[in-house]
Amino acid sequence: MQIYDGAQLRHCAASEFDGYSECDVLAIDNLDAIAGDPEWEAFFYQVINRCRDGGLRFLFAMSLRPDDLQTRLDDFRSRLQWGLMLQLPVSGDAEIREILRHRASLLGIGLSDEVISYLMTHYARDLTAQMSILRQLDETSLSHQRKITIPLIKTALMDRSV
Image (cartoon, rainbow, N blue to C red; front, side):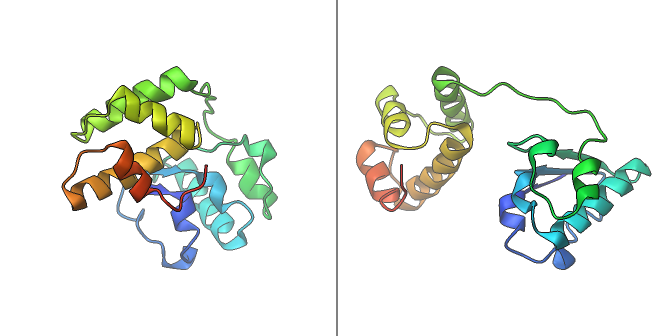
């Protein structure tokens, strides 16, 4: 299984991406990030066709429904609707807090209630943003050999907007 983030893929050329060629399951988070880029749309159009032929299993997550995407290639948008679609409920604050705590524990990080409250108060209250912040804090914590505290958060996320 290969896992990629569509927002990161967008920064490279689709013609250079061959990470999926040797896998049987390809997973892309934030696939909607490539919408509007004709090269990436054509690329994933072909990936979905390969899935239909049985050569690959493809999982992807998007924040929008395929019908709501602004794409250049209408066939790409229609291909996104070929498989099973699930709409997951939006996580509320309580769920985001629990997911943050659980994900942090998987990384070997203990997050205090105070730290989680600070993150939820001062930064975007959506799961994607909080997971991104947690990854950044994990890197900073490891490189500075410090626990994640509010002062560390202020230093590490100084240039990140609310």
